[in-house]
Length: 302
Image (cartoon, rainbow, N blue to C red):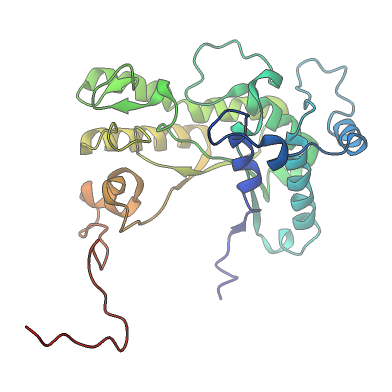
């Protein structure tokens, strides 16, 4: 019964999500070559040739550049192939492949002419589209192969909102006109996502963003926590994704011990704030509560 309810599986997303952490900058980002070493030269040359085979004469298509990211892309390609050879596609199950724009250093990406990218990095999307085109077929992309890129307004100055406004955010929480303009523009990230991938892969592909939230800034000390801003952030992202046919998944249904983060990151708590659910997202216990272990002697002194 559990399997019948299973819609999709996903390869572990950490290789794609964390590889961009190590860019040589101290104090925490100091070990990129060890964390994500390049493929052996012969293996890299062979894989790169396979990825870019036959597109030299097609100037409208992007080529995958050389670099340490090939190790991640090869690992994910093998995961796709493993799924392809299993019974899962014939059973109607999907494979959601998560990739992350931080995988690529900026210097190897195609130049993107638009001044505003709505919090996305279209150069990275072009390269992912080139890789996805070489890794999957058109029929697979329209049936069981789903590309997934997480997206948050909370990271990225252009789409962030803060209590104090500029320079820490693109708008102030109290500025109704300002946040309406910014959030309406930033909601177009989904259309940028789809149009960029369709240019590389053709139409009909399935796209998802399996992490998003209503949060306006990654720091709760700066983020907007008023219900009207959270609702606007949520509504505009959902509407933009629906228009672009990008499927969304919320960050977490509940996070009862998330403290101040719950208002924008817990779906259950946001729905409570919006009057959809009757109960807030609260934990059974509170910080500082003493939970006596089994067998603990009772203090009868009082």
